[in-house]
Image 1: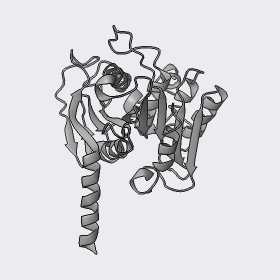
Image 2: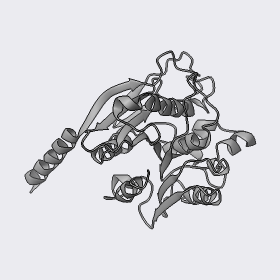
Image 3: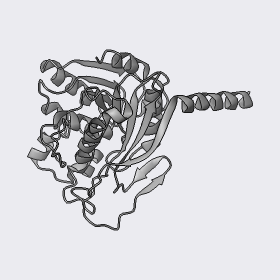
Length: 295
């Protein structure tokens, strides 16, 4: 039985590899990394996670032309703004998306760190904005519709994705071309949304904003307070029994979007806990159905 399961797994991996073209890492910045300073911090990759990221990149997973939909998603793994859960939430998700005709770009973003950044609170957002800019400016190269580029985030990566979706009016990266930095849609999976005392994941807030953030910083990075009518459409999913990131993060964001007349769909599972994508088969199926509605 074990050998049969191994054979099935190998065949599935082979089929997936034939339908998806994974590319080498793409450096986000060609003319120096903004908001950075010299440091002895060393980037490490262990157990499927990055630590101490100082060189942000994208890794592209491009579907075959026969299955390509023209849509693209920048995938932002979580990790509490202290690590990047690159393999489990990044690569695995990108492979599933590309298998379904959606170009996926896994973002390895800088971890907020006073030792490596002049202002650690905006470093991750700079990388997210640059990722949107890079993919949009190279859309034709990858067979992508430049008006169908979304961002997807898990946990603290969901905070970064929702920040990119609510703070796009102010460019934090060089943008002489005036490229649109607004994602066309957002996908949030058990996301951290708020920095408020009542809702936030405190380790994520501490990593991003420090031990004693100002009221202005808390408000600015509480994305349920930053929604406008121009915020992009959203798909949100969470588990009601999440003990790490309160499901009210998703509920409050849903309500803010609904009140602003922004199209939003939310799926809340009664059980699953935090990180349910690692053990809940089929979690992505409702998302794939929703993505078909993006025209």
